[in-house]
Amino acid sequence: MPPSMSDRAADIDGFLASAGWVGATRRPLAGDASFRRYDRVSRGGKVAVLMDAPPPKEDVRPFVAITRHLQTLGYSVPTVLAEDATLGLLLLEDLGDATYTKALASGTDEAALYTAAVDVIADLHAKPEAITIPTGLPEYDAVRLLTEAELLVDWYVPRRMGRPLDEASKGAFRDIWRALAPIMEGAGRALVLRDFHADNLIWLPERGRLRNCVLLDYQDAVAGSPAYDLMSLIEDARRDMADGLETQLLERYRAQRPGIDWPSFRAAYVTLAAQRHCKVIGIFTRLSVRDGKGHYLMHIPRCWRMLERACQDPLLAPLRDWLDTHIPAALRNTPLSELTG
Picture 1 (tube, rainbow, N blue to C red):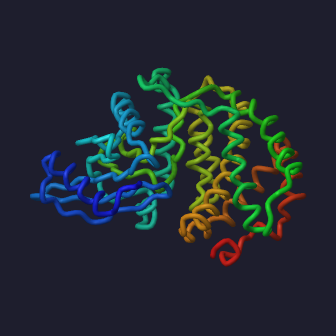
Picture 2 (cartoon, rainbow, N blue to C red; picture 1 turned 180 degrees about the horizontal axis):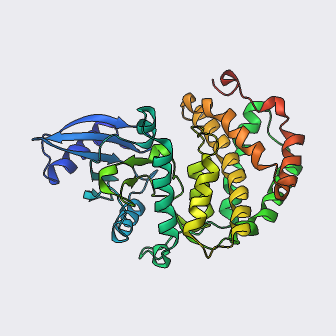
Picture 3 (cartoon, helix red, strand yellow; picture 1 turned 30 degrees about the vertical axis):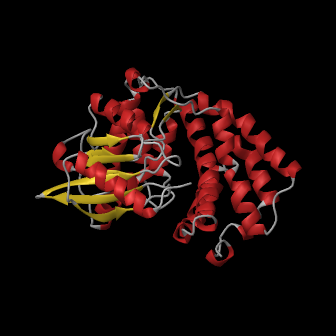
């Protein structure tokens, strides 16, 4: 039987007391697309962030392991001040509220923010030791690629079209992704943070290059293509960037990795972009239908635009043809009312 809200509150109070924060006040800081929740805790002029990641739905151990690994590599991440993996509770260093999203809204130079983020990723990918974590990393393999892409057909298609897809059509979709999977292996392997985008980065310019971009939300990190995080940053499901900036950022990354096979990297980039957009469209639909988080639906039209753009690449012609057959263009600009309720 899952614990009650009062049991969870008691667990949190006990955890904070054991960490030296007895009597601390808490206020909600942020929710998440997962089951994690965050509070800012205050006591005696000190502040910290509480991560509430209730088991068995969440597991804080990967976050802790990757945090410490990234710290040894010299990057800015929140220090873990206290932990209880059994309860799924962490007390983290409070690094403020200046996420990239908020910094952009306040007028901070967009190119400066994204350039700093690209520099971090390029530096991370250039370190062979980055992919070696004592606890190990899951592989971003063909099975994971396919499973995530299928979220489009598992959630968006039945909700948008009013019926599930037939098995033959699902099989054709799977075959396309099985054929595409080897492309993502052509750019080598790297530590992939996976949710590397504006909402999960904090801007601290006073820290200087490579530390001015603070990393968050990397507990789902894997070993996979170095193209993934760069694509995730640039092709953000939640916001558009200025015209021309994408090309500048790709060239900046390329200049810092002179030994890379760029044609193979670009092929992996566009393939993973299409896969991620399929996945995110499915996830945002699921968040609305299953979890009552309808606000994510506003981003689906953007995801469709980016997916359609990716499918203009000849490599993805089979996927483009499948989408044109099974999800006509008229069903891609999703009215919110058709995916809610």
